[in-house]
Length: 160
Length: 327
Ligand code: SF4
Ligand code: SF4
Ligand code: FES
Image (cartoon, rainbow over all chains, first blue to last red; front, side, top):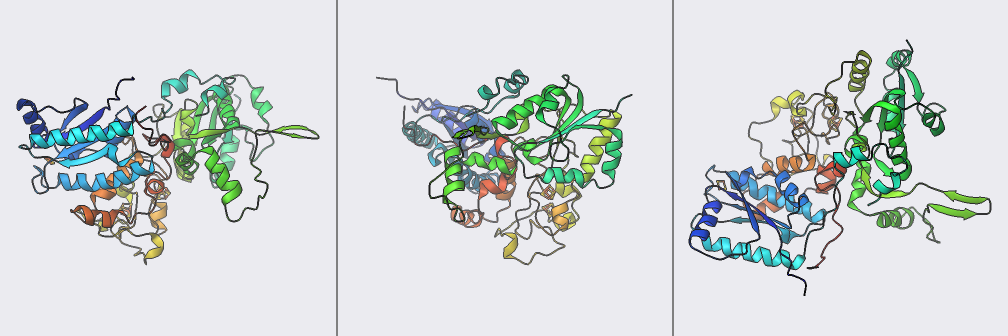
């Protein structure tokens, strides 16, 4: 039996709610899947869509954004911005062949340690069912430079 | 002292960039006076062999337009790199992949089937598709191979500078040529255009409200466009906030929204992500269903936000391994 696929999930949690909730989940010894790597940001509105794309391109199988409930954002409107961006980003991800279940936005307040557990466990199960995200690698400047003068090796570097 | 040798080449492009050189009008004569054009297949009768016969680095500079799509383009790009001291990616396709780069949303088979069979104006009852090799009584005929992925020039060979635009604005070309002739070039890797957003110099910028909110996005043919008001405020997807300036807001001057051909400003890594972020942020809605109502009206988001830059974007091509299941 091959080992069960363990998805890597990058989680962007806002400092004032979801990060505290994750902390609470920890101190309350709530067990949840160890597949998430948490990045703490000041606000869900700070999550630039470039961060999400970068996470996928660098090997994440899923990306989770956690912020304060509507009306509770420490900076008033950051989470509304996050919600609008997430909507359009999801449309683009879908077109780019990245399934909806790999990208999720959740409102989790500082007291909802239990919600961290259910959301993470549920997301890990869904991404596990989808399997690993095999994104094609983009040529890096190093690779390009290494092949710069290989005229005869042209065919090797081209292709898929 | 002999005049510096200059080359021009085109890869996967529409020909508009070659046209831009001609748009230099009588200034092209000054260029011709100052340099020796050593290779320019579109205009002059040089062949690949002429380039191959040159010493390495014999040309001072080569302007290469177009994305890289075929084995032949790749080979030519490598040859130029070998024979030229400077390589300048000329135009959006060479710079970021351009319109041809949108083919990264599909694969070669789908593309060929569509173009040679399904398009309503095509009659091809025998389903003949282009082949890399084809035997005819006279011998075998060959065609360059199509790459599976469209690349920007710098994804094939190291590039020294970028002249952005679709096509590059005449002013930027002139500035670049004189900088090269005077040896006054910025650091390697620079995009040869001002590093500020289009909105900064837009004639309509004063009509752009501080806090912009849009309740319905529209396409240019759907409305009577006010020629004085900020286009984004009118609900048109103007890419001015994320696009680099350098074209004197040519499209806005023509009463059309900027589509982003000059690419992003220097700090942005993914034009489309920044553009979608800017557009989503101004949608006038806070509830999920209302947000969907506003943003789902945007037709072809990838084609809109990544119109010129898909191959150089972070994801760079559509993921073709969907629903792969756990192992
Ligand atoms: S959004 Fe477009 S029309 Fe409005 S100020 Fe910027 S460039 Fe000008
Ligand atoms: S306005 Fe935008 S699309 Fe038009 S030429 Fe300038 S950068 Fe390109
Ligand atoms: S501070 Fe938590 S979402 Fe803005």
